[in-house]
Length: 304
Image 1 (cartoon, rainbow, N blue to C red):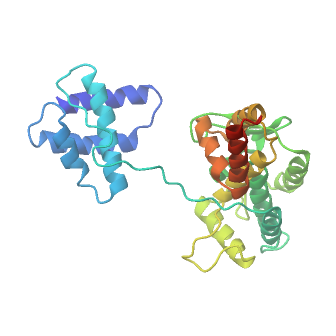
Image 2 (image 1 turned 90 degrees about the horizontal axis):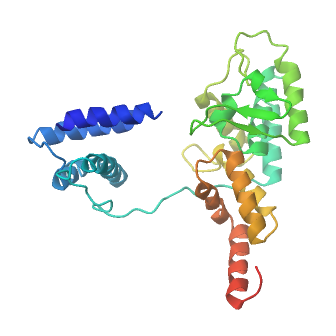
Image 3 (image 1 turned 180 degrees about the vertical axis):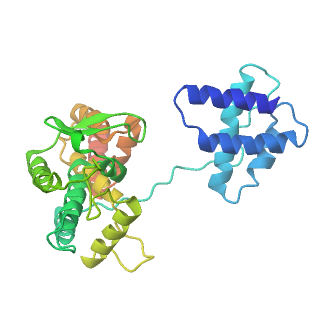
């Protein structure tokens, strides 16, 4: 009975456009576990027994919540199924790694170092300096930048297709960013490649993410942004964080303006929920100080 219910549950999610691969594998594991005990209905005790078999607390919570969503769906049609509490194995606050906020000088140093890559005169140094500069100037994800095609560069901006949340969006570009991109395109279009990727290296194909990451780490260490291998430091993704934070810092500090700016920034960044963008408010002491000052003024009755 649970196997049949799982098949219907998976089919429903896939029909709605979800890949549902990881969830399917997890739930299939649970169903085998439960049916091994002869269960025909979902039981809280069995979910907990299965969940705690995972080796870490985050994995246990993921098992619990995945099974809980399955249970909610089943119980909607048959009350004999039990739904485990979401906090049955403890609560966990969302933990996000504190972002590194690049200074303009550090971004410039990174781009300059990329422009000095070997072999000199090839497209490789120009490709990397343009790639890192574009991410810093637009806040796009590295995966989005590497997926860009030549036809995605339009007069109105960059077309970001079917990204993390299966959404497409258009990114308007500042004139300085467009000029730098056009300079790269002059060289890129002279390459006779079969690959239509915007960013290609000396192999005339788009570089793989591990290659880009290794190059970034090499450059970051060469300019003193990162320490020895194994020591944490700024990441490529922090260029996106920096864009978001600098954008919010430049916004006029009144509530209505900030609210409009947050919505626009959320759309520009391709966030699925505006709450994901609000997280950037706590990313730097400067923003937190502005929030604290506004809160104090409101507490005193002053206009904010």
